[in-house]
Length: 116
Image (cartoon, rainbow, N blue to C red):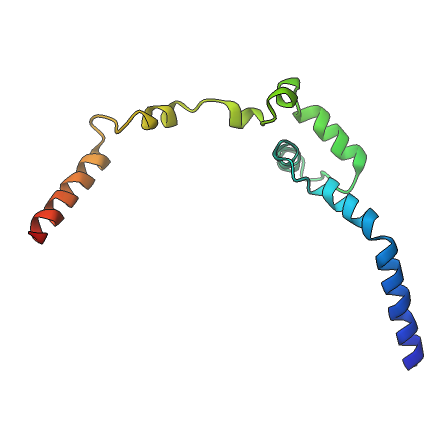
């Protein structure tokens, strides 16, 4: 019994060592490090709950559907390359008449007055 278990462990270790590269390659295809491919797979998963990341045909169809020629040129998904008007306005400085900004400023003025 004990030798059978040891033999099983040895066989499992050899099989794991031999198949390590193929398993690692498959893992990188299922969970890519490229942001563009991650975004495409996330969109496919949210659009179709039966989407199978393990299927190379499903991944290829997903990339054909969601990756556009402009993505290959820019290296960014379309959602990340679009300008956001709110962020652009905020980068110019505080908006005039923003009650949150005014209340925060009033609060800090009061606190600073108490410290003196």
